[in-house]
Length: 599
Image 1 (cartoon, rainbow, N blue to C red):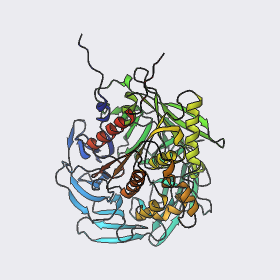
Image 2 (spheres, rainbow, N blue to C red):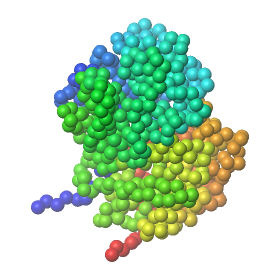
Image 3 (spheres, helix red, strand yellow):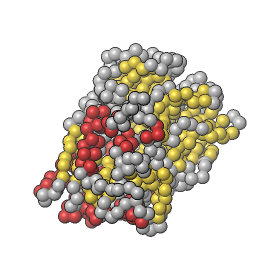
Image 4 (cartoon, rainbow, N blue to C red):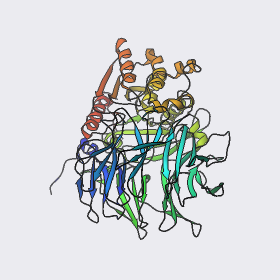
């Protein structure tokens, strides 16, 4: 019998991804953003065939994707090598040359909404108002443009349009834990949640009729629930909630009079169907642990993008109570048995707060005894049961991964999420330290022998833990993490700056806290070998954040390597860059692997 070698480490990183998709009104075509060519482009499947054909060749990530409601063309947003200055383009159904629709250098554009006749595009832009944003109506035939909503006190984004196009839904975002939803009809602006001094959020909304709006909010509650507002009667109604679950996504099926809702509980998602006619509520079983997007077509079919910890995101169609996988993305050349599902564990933090964590344990035949602490990004996000090729790559190379959902993480209620506001460097840091102590107390690790790696806020936390708790670690990787809160709050995108006071703090009012919470304060105790990775075009955590910590450490003759990616932003949009980064990290970590004999 022919024997085959073990899959190479690079195979795990060769896993392809899907970031967005849309379905044509007649369901004869499905378009999706994927890196099948090594770089993100738009591909299409002419259903029922699921063989993909490439539509674009611009090699850029897609930010916003939809069909004309008559099914005549596609609208898509693209930035330039990760700079997040998204511009909008039209594309024929068969692909080809992109036609610029909204294309003004240096502007950030989002929230595409097409009119029913496909002649008008509504969108939100930083054009003329970079701090608070404006919403415009653009005539696709004449190019004429009209300002229809001006942001004045905080970033203001349009998110929906009534069927008769007379009412615009817009959201005013004061922070990740405070947002308000309004309906604009003529000169009248209606707040859809009752007036209150208590902060709350609205996360999604849709029109059922020209007057009836369904939306998701945690007004007067800790977890997000389904609510409605009737513009004719000015009545707010709490419709449905589920204990300890937060609703995150809402879609309306006009054909069947159903609402589809994605609900988040800790590290997993659930899909529910709510029948507006019968008032019945049904849980729909899915093949996914986490769900990134739902699409409901005019016929009432449901499409979903989602995955699991051991299966990459795929696009599924739900018909006759069955899910069909339209894409078949897997880890190439790797049997499912070689992939690792995480354990979900809980531990008490320094103040008794319960922290949930994912613990990925390397398979016995691969285990080298090493553990990586992974503080997630956000910070108001979470590590969940979604697929990370990098995790499976490290697991296959013998490294176990411990990923805590420290205070501030989503999926555990608004109060838990708010705990990181103005407290970037105390509570979350000690939650991670408590996780390290749990690993040590339970025999999984030894103090001083743990590896540390994080990206974005996780990169910030990796730097801070290194500076304040270096005795736990032997090597540290920072992936585009802020190093100095003073320079960070000054360099974020303009439409982020209004939320900085609540989210991070005020550099004048909170000067002492900024000093205490900034990793660069602790250069003297950053003594362990370090690798820093940065995208040159990153608009969120700018290159200077990494430059300054690397230079400061070099000035002290510390062991630090710096990997700068000239064509990336806040993440890795190009497969070769992603592979190069994680191979570099593996090479860096391998220097510190101790030989362990297993019993």
